[in-house]
Image (cartoon, rainbow, N blue to C red; front, side):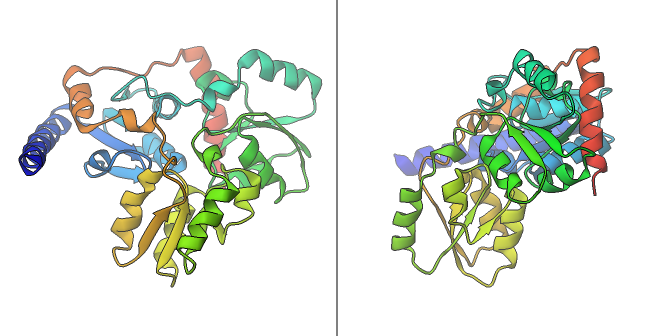
Length: 312
């Protein structure tokens, strides 16, 4: 019975992929997928990437329709950078708890308390917060962005763990908002110690959104893309991975001869996983749900994103 069910599922996926190819052509659409998406989404994407790469692709594409397989703030960023495009998201419930941990009123009060500070906001934030921001960043370019800002005092929003990591790499004063990623923050020192006992020869690679005491244990610390590149190019054959388990798709694709063990079974973002192939096809069939950003918000937010893209 199980084999029959798997065969039926495989056939359904083949049909969905065929329908998807047809719709992409009809709509002149491009599919952008974050590395944390389900395998079935990453398999059909035109581009897989982290927040930074996908923001670049959204700004550069000639396609008329962008289907953003990620969470809501990513779709907003695509719409802000490509205002003339139609931006779809397969499931509008795909939110980001960390992005919801910062609010406009609170940020404005903090800015009033520190009038000489510049606001650097992690891309994992809403359009409204980006509109209150001097420059955005991602985990892959956060240190470079901080160094590019012409102020020694920075209001950092919203991830305290990434903020702590960045603070170790700059002499500037960071006023850090108390937000965090629910998924990365679940990883504990105990988890890493236990995994190292099971896999003593493995290197531990970790995302800076994890807790500082966990990040301090890393053999390599970096953004999702940096982790992927490190594992691909490393001579090591076994890794303990301290980031979201969707990265396993690209890790295995890049290095089929290497072993990857996720540091805990809880490194799964439920919001990223609400998207699936069936919803992706339906989004292109119905052209819903569409991402909308009010023009006055988008105009202000666009400046902070474009400044980020200009940092080399």
